[in-house]
Image 1: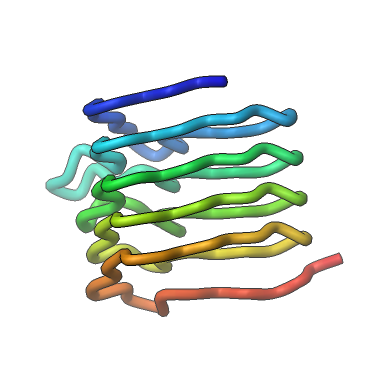
Image 2: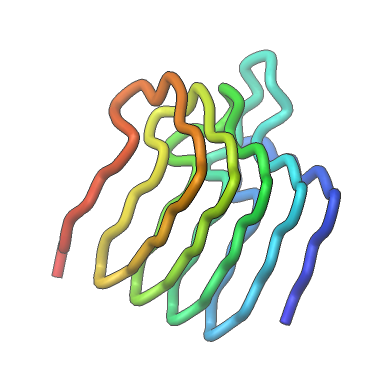
Length: 121
């Protein structure tokens, strides 16, 4: 399993943290997103291919993620607790049999919506 604690994970036009192929990833007290000032990440956290990701007390987006702060696809699973997601296009997107559990988290100013849920199969 991968563990990131008190890290800053930034990207420009790419995924900041990609979880795939049955991986198990935990982010605690991390800041995830683009560099700001118009330099946005494509996505904050992308979870798919049976991967599992836990986000605890993280800041995701903050105006610097393009598509979604947290994206879950292809049977990926995400657990979000105590996180702050702000000023992104979408807060959380779940598709292709992915699943998300979110508790005690704050979503502010999601441009298109906090949640997008669907099944494209």
